[in-house]
Image (cartoon, rainbow, N blue to C red; front, side):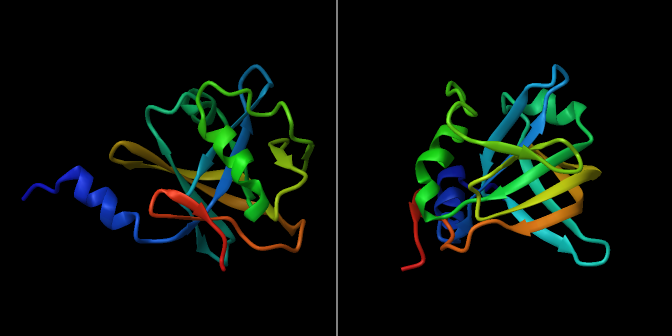
Amino acid sequence: MSIDPTAFRAVLGRYATGVAIVTTRGPDGYPVGLTVNSFTSVSLDPPLVLFCLDRQAGSGPAFAATDCFAVNILGTDHARVSSRFADPAAERFVEDQTVEWETGAPVLAHALAALDCRLHARHDGGDHVILVGRVLRAEVLVDSEPLVYWRGGYRGLN
């Protein structure tokens, strides 16, 4: 039985997700990042998280070559930042202050929270690659409300 892609997206759009920016460094040392809503925790012991990367993403080669990444969880005032990191043609790091933790992956200094990860595993996920990271450092950076994505748009909790 075949699933209609439009109907499938409509159903999935009814599931509210948080929004994050995942970052790494490319082979040339330059920062690379993209917006994701396919992020989740996997395990507490060991501490593992995952995100799903579209195989067609322009940042795909950088993530294929890396052994680390950072997950930057966004707040309600980060919709513009999220949109910029989702735009393949945008200069993504032009306005954001970053810091480096253990792995050297860029951490957005203004994110709600961040996780610095060493690559644990890669898995096939159809038109996506599932990257699992072992968390080396996790910190809450700002105490604020999260940015939520629901039915094709950004929302707050209220």
